[in-house]
Image (cartoon, rainbow, N blue to C red):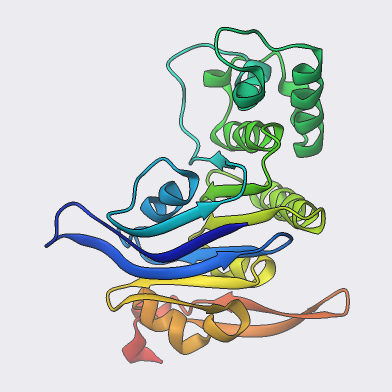
Length: 253
């Protein structure tokens, strides 16, 4: 489980990124963090992963968290398999080398994500989407009950976005707790049980179905946002549509 209790982060008492954020992510559920650029989504997920220390409040996480950053190239020519093996650092320990069990866990994670064929490729030579999938495999290989993802669909084409969302739902069904930031309200509507909206007026938290309304999304992003109902194998869902004509501003609704 992951819990935020009155969490705030800032670069000085007069420069808060966000304040008084409280929510929890239970096993088998997902919480999505949405907001415009610069709203603090990456900062929040880094606090969740333990990479940043909040200025106020408390973050509690059960037995560690696997972390998936936004894909970026490495200056070192590690193979994709070596990158995934790095996720086993907690189990391997300091000054030890990965054993057979660690390699098996890394291989299983790569198979699950669908990148086993890239195991011998050098990480810097992979496309941005392939790098993102390898980083997700690395976090899965860590074997933590909580997975924290910063923009997991970055650099992915539509087919691979579907692959990642399907994989995340599979991990949830296995009892994993997920926290992800995203620029895609569609992904949040499909995947998340709860949502955190970071905007100019502070943070709002609640059930995703109740919070991700046309009015709330339009106010959050400063453009007209519409959600349209559709059926996914008999399951009612909503898709996001932005009318680009006329500038897409709220005044054109």
